[in-house]
Length: 224
Image (cartoon, rainbow, N blue to C red):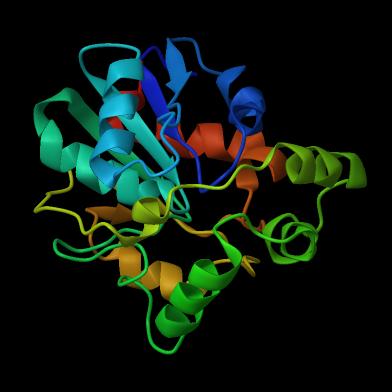
């Protein structure tokens, strides 16, 4: 589909294999950003790990869900390397915000309290319900088995000033119970364009990988 290198930033705890279907359609290089090894890694460490894994000197970032926070920090660290940004049902904090602070009240307070008490790994009921609802049981089983907790700082560190690249696109998901469409629209205004909502839940790369590939290809930098 595209020969432009692509760096994928997964949502919190999600395994790299969620992108396999999308990556199979890409003609160029691609990579999924790894997590830092330290359990208390800072947001900066997440962004630097992503930069080290990038598949080229300049690349398109595809950020899903909370991966949008890492994308924002990455853009603050090395904006010259990012040719374009596709935010896929992503949380995009404004400068000075964290993932938690980007959420509206009272969701922000509830989320913060839950993470302090129960940690950052979502419970199985949430994975099978709002996160992966509608996906085949075997896919849900794989997600439950492979999800890992993120550092608390991943969610709480505030991002430094960042600017979206000229070629940037928000791709909303219409049937999303994890990040409802009205909330996605609040983040979409930070980018230069917004696509029509995909008729999927929160994991469109598993539900309709072809539609995700098509969205990546709409960026001028993503076309051959």
